[in-house]
Image (cartoon, rainbow, N blue to C red; front, side, top):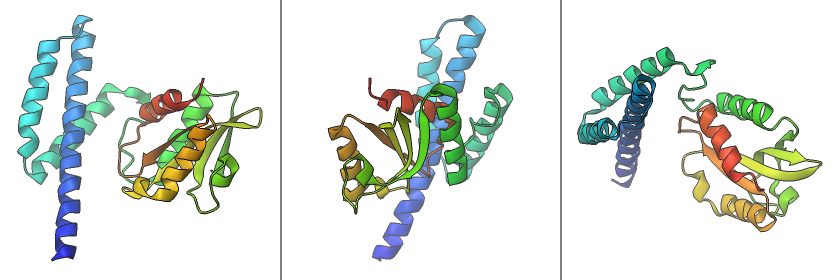
Amino acid sequence: MGFLDNLLNKEARKIISSVVDSVVDNVTDSIKDNLGASGATDTSAAGTTATSASASAGVKHTAAASATKASAGRRKASGLEGETGDDEDCCYDVSLIRSRIEKAAAEDWPSYELRKNIPAAEVGGGAKDQGFDYGLYLDGQPKLMIMILDQYQYRNKCVQRAHKACKDRGIGSFHLLEHLPNRKTYIAERMKECMPN
């Protein structure tokens, strides 16, 4: 029964994640529509949307999937990030996540060097610690390190030790999880938040 319980829990998490993503997208779209129409935020409309969206959290999987598809269609039509498609869910596509990291680094950090596949030992971690997929360097010094991880891999001690090694040396670090949307705007914001001053 343990295997079946695990399988059911994973499927339940996927369904809940899908519903939460669609709810957040609907609320965000509603707020942006209100901002575009009136020039000010209509908090009562956002609150109503959030309330009705949270009430729909009990919807069956098929309804959540159709809501996600409808939300994706609205995002394409609204062009939140232009014509590049960077506002779409990455759908476990690691090459797409890598492409978005590289674009964000080129646009927002042009004077930095972007390196790939950095061992944790280079930032003071142990030989068995998780390496970083990307690193932003300024004048040869590491400033920000990025990992791309599987869904629960962030819990591993080798990952936590690598992040701690960065923190101890004043180097920013964060990870992206493959199962999340990882939109380019999100990646760019995370880079800005984690970059040390």
